[in-house]
Length: 481
Image (cartoon, rainbow, N blue to C red; front, side, top):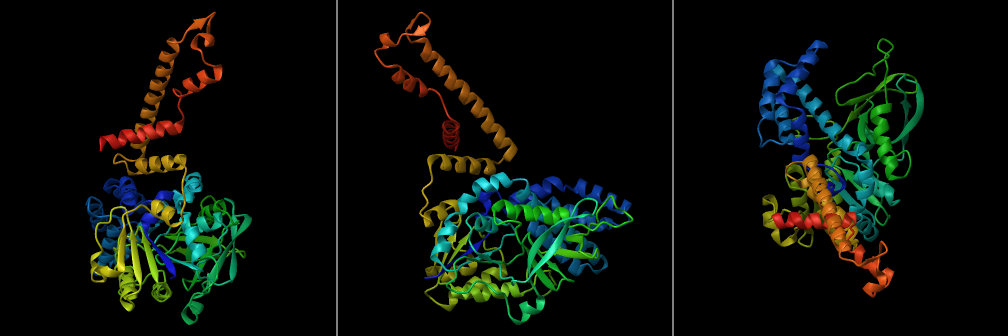
């Protein structure tokens, strides 16, 4: 039985990536209606900007609590399709906001490299699945690079369906001088149209990764006709993250008329090739309400969705982790796959799931539910037994990120508890020392009738470690709920 994975945002949560509402909170905290209007004033001062009615409509949507970032982007998409007088304005705001989403994900990678390095182990169950399924198909709806990081960490062969053709992109410093190169694998639009995507063949060891909604490291180029995926500067997790950083900071085009400031374009990277000519890499994140909708063009070719439809048919079993079944085009592919054969099985992994998603309810006999986090489920699949230390660190990290007051408030709560816990433990130790017999200023071991080592062991029980404190803190939080 060949098993594959379908990954949604929840699959990367324990490795530091945001869920939909977490990302929405970050965006809305920064992009308030007042901030949006101030930005538009500065854009107008630079010679462009948007009509007041367009800015006001987006500002009003930002204040609707029930709208997450995908819904807000969908609003802009619908607006530029129906408001012909302001089509370009709405489209421009949509592209700009997609770029803001890109930067949220980008900063989660580059600002949290140590966290990712420490927590990538929570996905190790995927390594086990890759050993049992050759190759392991992973269909990802995520933009992040966590599977790329995992594969690099464990030296797993990874194919994203690009050809073996490789191009180089010149890295430049702030003055425009070449300081190195980035490598990228390419698939041309013509190859994609005529021959498809060259993934690992059946029986090959490794991972076939199809990122259906785009990725931080995938771009269109050559006038949008071809696709490019960055290759890590070295085969390591750090190499994956360094490539992402370099692409967004060292692929530059500096015009001689403004040498102090590289050229910036919305949702693209403008860079100078080896001849000095300006080229563009267009970011590929698909977000909003019209993904793969025939009514509007998009940056990613529809062939990616077709490859999902065709390659899922090689599987007998699909494990969906962290996907909320909110995308109609994805749900239809899964429905078609299940309806084709009664032997096909879908397992849905989600800590909050209570029922089968409505679009698939008629296929209930083929669907099982696992109310579990990604880490707990993958540990079970991979038969991974974690130490108490690992479990406590994982549980603390999860509590902090899910705290209703935000990460900052949660960290402060833990620090305050830690300080009080330390004081309490030292007070207990001091009180116990006061009860011991002393002679000539030292503890009278003979009077106690025990050895010095026995005394040390008894007293050490009143000392503490960080993990003792974490355990006590988590127990205190459990008692509050």
